[in-house]
Amino acid sequence: MIKFDKVGLVGVAVGVVALGYTFYTQRKLHNALVSIDLAIDVISDDIAVDVSDAIVERAVAKAVDREVGKTIKNISNDVLRNMHTDIHREVKASVNDSYSSIRTKVTEEVSRQVANMDMRKLKEEVKEKAKEMVIEKFDENLESLLSDFNNSLSNVSKIYSSIADSMVKKKESEATFKIGLS
Image (cartoon, rainbow, N blue to C red):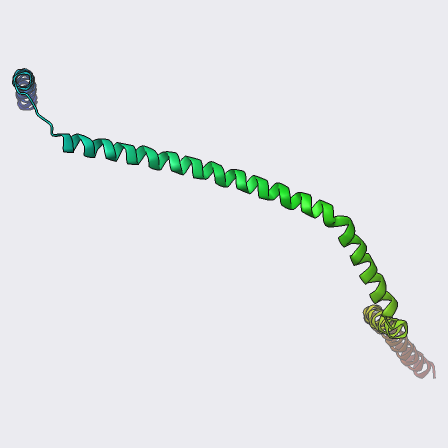
């Protein structure tokens, strides 16, 4: 156990030394960065940068193009939105205006077609369809009745069999009784 304590103590000591070294190197790096920043500021203050007019014009042209593009896009979106709203409003107004005349024309056409229908043929079609539906319903009821009848018939058959067996046993017992008395 003493051996483990010594190993743990050595581990803690190494950790403390590593932590101290980390803080030391971080401080040195920070000081170096501050020195580099100061040197860059001093050098940049002393250097005069001459930018040509062509570079400035190109940068301005790019900025103008970018802003014009954004403005054109916004304007075109607004125009499309307004056109959509206007078209929707005009279509709705047109439909509302023509509704009554369309309704009248549709009513007249439906009335004309109904008047031209062969009523005898229509009656026959309705009778045929009704007949099919009645037969289908009747078939369903017949199947149910047939099932009930078969069940009842089976029960009656069992009753008659039971009566017949009972009568046979009674005759046998009477015959045995008569034989025994004679």
